[in-house]
Structures are given as structure tokens and as C-alpha cells.
Image 1 (cartoon, rainbow, N blue to C red):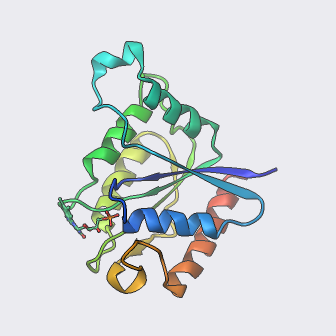
Image 2: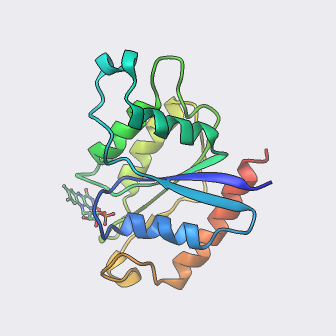
Length: 180
Ligand SMILES: Cc1cc2nc3c(=O)[nH]c(=O)nc-3n(C[C@H](O)[C@H](O)[C@H](O)COP(=O)(O)O)c2cc1C
């Protein structure tokens, strides 16, 4: 049976390195796996008042995540933290109360930045929320892609072979986590 993976990217930028990283995961999938990259740009700002009439875009995201065997989340780092659009998506996925979509879900967190740290602080902040939400967050591999200027084209396509090898290995680990 095919392993269904949902990908969420925390950047809305057209030539985003993090989107390019997610696309590289898609290109590296083994035959028994599929990856659907879900958009988060049309989600409304989270507002607890909207929970009783849950927005359709947020419900579609929840349905996709709940139907997936595993998640990959690629986050940029904004001001040493998770970008607001991504935190917004996490908040929608955590609600309504008692219907948190992350419970038990294997999640691989990855991130890319032009500097040396590979969005590590944002990744750890995201992992903190995901652990609280009882996701099965993979502690390893840690996936800090720094120096993106040398590893991606200007259009955001990953060209670095070492990162590509790391992606294949991380996919194996994530898929194994769905079988445990
Ligand atoms: C508002 C803002 C804050 C940023 N803060 C950080 C930061 O704290 N750490 C970091 O490594 N890069 C930071 N950057 C640079 C981003 O890593 C860079 O813009 C990156 O390309 C964003 O990811 P993307 O290519 O997927 O859009 C920041 C960029 C913006 C626009």
C-alpha cells in the first residue's frame, strides 16, 4: 500500500527555498509513497469565534492531514521564530478543541535559510508546538539546510547532491515511522 505524505511549506514566496526543498522531497519519493503539498495561503487568520462554523479551507487542510500517514513541514525562520502563516496553519489544525489533527502523526520538520543555521530556531519552536499537540515528531534526522545560495538555483530548485542524499535517507526514516 502507498504511504500518503502531506507537505506544508511555511513560506508563501513564489521562489521559496523551502518550497524548493519540499519539491525535492517529492522528486525523491520511493515508488510506494506519494506527497501532496497543501497550500496555506488562503487560510483565514485564526479566530476562535470561527470554530463553530469551521472555514472550508481550514477543514480541507484538516481532512488532508488526518488522511495522511505522515507529514513533512518545511519552515523558514522569521526573526528567530516560525513564520506567522505557518503558526496560523498549526493553530487551525489543532482545533476545534478535542479534534487536534496532529495526534500520533509522524512529522518530519525541515527548513532552509540563506544563513548558516538552516532555520534551526524556527524548527525547534515548531517542534515544541507539535510535541504539545502529541504529534510523533522525529527527533532525527535534524534537517538544517543553510547556505541556500550555493545549494538552490535562483528559482528555488535544489541542486546540491549532498542535500538530495539526505532527503532520500530522511524519507526512509519517515516512512518507517508510519509502520511502527
Ligand atoms: C521578516 C524576515 C525575517 C527573517 N528572519 C530570519 C531569521 O531569523 N533567521 C534566518 O536564518 N533568516 C531570516 N530571514 C531570511 C530568510 O531565511 C530568507 O528570506 C529565506 O529565503 C526565507 O525562506 P524562503 O526562501 O522559503 O521564503 C528573514 C526574512 C524575513 C523576510
